[in-house]
Structure formats: C-alpha cells, structure tokens
Amino acid sequence: MKILVVDDDKNMRTSIKRLLEIEGIDVECAENGLSAQRVLENSVFSAAVVDLKMPGLNGLELLKWIKDEGLRIPVVMVSAYGEIDDAVNALKYGASDYIVKPFSSDELLLRLNRIVEDQKFKNAVESGKHTQNLESELIGNSESVRKIKSLIEKVAQTPTTVLITGESGTGKEVAARMIHRQSSVYEGPFIPVNIGGIPESLVESELFGYEKGAFTGAVERKPGMFELASYGTLFLDEIGEMPPALQVKLLRVIQEHKIMRLGGTQLIPVNVRIISATNRNLEYLIEKKMFREDLYYRLNVVHIEIPPLRARLEDIPMLTGSIIEKLNRKIGKKITGITGGAVKKLKSYNFPGNVRELENILERAFIFAEGETITASDLPIDLPGNINARPGSLPDGPVYGPPYTLKALERYAIKKALHRWEGNKTKAAEELGISRRTIINKIKEYGIE
Image (cartoon, one colour):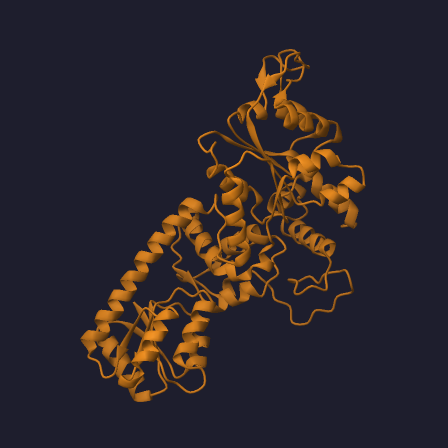
C-alpha cells in the first residue's frame, strides 16, 4: 500500500507519516495542493489523505482535479470539528470518506484499509466489464458517447438500415456490434465484411456466393455472406469502396430481400439486417458519380457519426483503463495503473489514428515500462516544442488545434504509419483500419513518397 498525505501543517504531515510507516505502509507527502498535483502526475497511490483547508489549492479543489483527470485514487478528507459540513460536501464530489481531527491511528488505518479494499473491488468489477465489452462496446462517458449509446438503443429495436460514419479507428464496427447485440436478431450471426479488403473481382462472389461451375475453380456451390448472415446482421465496412456495378445489385437486395448466386438462375430470399460503415464522404462520391445516390438513401435511413478521439479527450482515462486490462491479459504483464502525467500527455496528443492508435501507443508503453505503472516517459509520443508548419501541412510531431485540414490530418496519419512500418503498405493499412487498395490510392492522391 502506498499513501499520499497532503497537508500544509508540517507537524500533521509528519505525524500521519510516522503513524502509517509504523504499520509498514509506504508514504509520500505533499505540503499543498499544487505540489500534490505534481506528485500525482508522476506516481500512483493506493489512497490519499488530504487536508480540507489549505492555502492556494485547497483540499476540495484538489479532489475535483483528481476526478477531472480521471485518476482512480480514493481520497480521505481530513477536517476540523467545525468543517464537518464541508467534509460532507466533499463526499458529493467523490471523496471516499472523511475523518475529523483529532483522530487515532486505529481510526485512520481502519478507514484507509476499507477504502483501498473498496477501490480494489470497484477495479475488479470494472475490469470484468472491460474484459467483456472492450471489443463490443463504445467505452466512455462523454456527452457524444452517451448520445450515440442512446441512439443505438433506439435504432436496435427496428430492422432499418444504419450508416455509421467516422474516421478510421474510431470504433464503427464496435457500434455495429452494439446495435446487433441489442436487436431482436441478437441470437443470429454478426457477419463483418470489409469491402475494401476484398479484391474487386471477388466482391460479388463473396457477397452473393456462387454455383458449382460458375467460373474456373468453382468446384462446388458456396453460399455468400448474405446467406451466412441470414436472420442476423451483415456489416458492410468500407461501403464507399464497393464497385459501381455491384452497387446496383446491393440496392436490389435491400429493396427485394432476395439474392442470386453467381452463375445461378433462381432468386433466394434473405432475411438480413444491413449495417454499413465508411470513413469516406459518400455525398462527395455521389457528386463524382462514384456512388449511387439511390443506394445512399437506402443505406442512410439512420445515420450514426462516431466522433474522433480528439473530440472526446475526457474519455481517455476510461479508455486507458480498458486497454490496460486487455494488455495485461495479452502480454502477461501486470500494470496496475497510469500516472496523472501520462494521462495529461495523452490528452495533449491529437490521435490521428483514434482509439486504435491509443491502443498501439499503450501497447508499446507496456513493453518499455520498467515498473508497475505507466509514466509519461514510457509513452512513445514525441511532443513538439514549436510547430512551424505551412498552411495545409503538418509537422513531424503530433498535431494540435484546428488550423489543419482533414486532408492534411489524413496525409499525416498515412505518412506516420508508413514510416512506422518501413514502407510496408499492408501493415500501415491494417494499423489505420483501411484496405491496401485505399492506402495505395491515398498515397497517389497526396503524392506521398
């Protein structure tokens, strides 16, 4: 157990420190709220004992800061007899307990042991939730995530088509799985198909299947994804990559609920819920005659926009907790937490690769972390000092603020991914959540060498 004691009274700090150290507890002290912030940015504690009345940043303000930063540290507020109302008020802001001066060593130890055990239980419960839901639920409590979850709950009750849009790595497939899980066909299959990841010549046979002898090599009948998803959900990812000729066939399936296998002569009824997703601007593709307008309106009965991570930075602490639990299982290392300084550093980053990039960053931090906590120095993010960039371009480091266009952000993300994978387009495309065909087109479009 490691405890942080925050009190402007040196005698009180020393007394509490000695009292706890006698019990074999590791103790660190801070003389005020500001110094406590600096300590919390670089270390992880089991609990904190915080004096309510301090000059400068008082105990209540420090408590609010701890909660705003997403630090999972239980706090015992220390108050004088006449400050009990303030101490009770602190409970409303998230304090775990309060203790009134003067107090005995047994009383303080009892409270600390209780809140630390309570926090362990909460972490275990949260860990179970994250284990179950990290791959199938949008993690976060920001207003935008709450609105999306509410919309998903409503649309899941109907069989209507849904179009999910958002940048690569934001969690579009996760949202699609949430819709399926809450729908009436939740017991049926959820079949994801990455249109951009299938060679154009094979898209039709993959989606609609084929009869024996339909083409050279078709030695037996094979059902397509529409049939495999029967009485379930078919998730068409990267729908903007669908070849124009097949867009007509997809439109007909949505209208008639029937398909015909390649080389077949009979229409086959299908009962499938269609959810599609894209990171491209379909309205722009319609203008360029690359996507059918009638298909767009059929797919876009309900539209869900997944915001980029940089637009919901307040979700980073919760996301980080989920990812750490996932990585503990994957890597076999026991990381117990992340320092406030590391969270602050993450929040200062732009995340062009969104949640997928956050996972990538934390996985590398796991590898290099020497202790049981991830610190700011473990994070493989080089924060720039001065950014001197021409309009419409990006510096080599992370990106801040809105002077950069979406195209510039996209170009930057592709360049960084290619650099990380030493020019391997397949690996870079996988990291960015796009197809190899898409990244090749983007490289040509942006003139990336």
